[in-house]
Length: 88
Image (cartoon, rainbow, N blue to C red; front, side, top):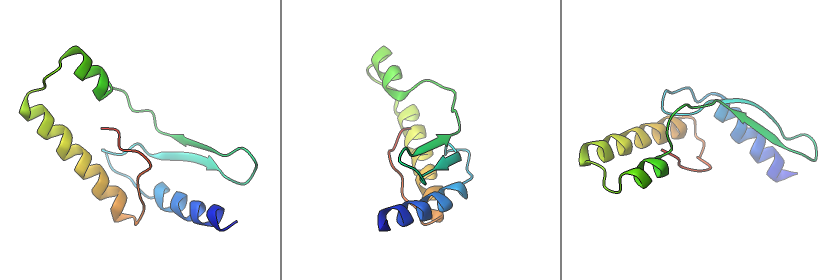
């Protein structure tokens, strides 16, 4: 039960994260036996698909990806929450 309370607190904070670098949490339910989380769809190409097509990325593109990831983490951490997986 403590894990569920802790998760609910994380989810409440996650709903407050509004930043263009973070997929928003839209809905969730952790009250029953089957939990679910619904997040915003982010259109684009996954980084692993980019690197499969082009093994070496220009340093400028790598720097831009890193900056965006850092901005996303800053927005998440500003709400005193943590990320479940980093996916630039």
